[in-house]
Image (tube, rainbow over all chains, first blue to last red; front, side, top):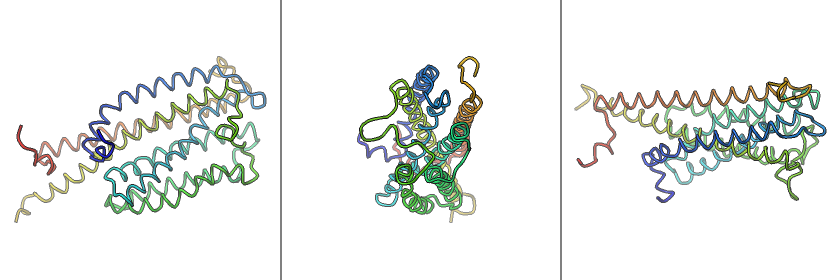
Length: 246
Length: 62
């Protein structure tokens, strides 16, 4: 099956039905492995056991940004190619991305209190992630405000592409400005600055969180396709209602 | 749990982080699963009333 064939919602639904059980099982297995490695990981020489928060905070942060990057690609699909599933993908990624960004903000605050002595500082990294969360809420509100899905899709696509400017700001904020937040320690030139005994659980947890995101996203896309099917059936029902058959 | 894992003096912050993450993930799963049941039921109701998509109507009889 060519990739373009998936643009057909009915084919997508059939594929999702086959894929979802496997993805769910893989997600559970990845989390089992990740949590097993996490509880066995050594304490950090400076941060002690609070380093265990990193195993959920960092993957949540990556996926918060991944969600917006995915929505930006989908926005291009909506505006340039009018891909049938592009706006479905964008709309359904927003609440999932918002949830992961929320996890990132809360776990970051809970990690910051014992390490920095404060839950929050208005520095570039924390503020730009908060802005990402607020943008997610804005896009979700926009989708709910405009009733016609195709009009909502175009408006949300423009807002999403404008908001994508925030992604490089989040990524490099720790290099560009003074911040309490630690600098990049995994995806950096010269390789990760984390010891393998801590890096391995982090990467396995990142895989588990990514599988969870993909599974939830495909399930949510399935729901959105069904919602649109209900909408079109309701319109059809209104057309064939008694008294309107002239 | 913190005693078993020996999470040190900041155990409350670690346990709270994992608890919040679990709660948000469970909420997401329940919300998506409940939405799926609702949408499936709505489609089934409409189709049982004879309302079908044009593409379904256009299909030749088997």
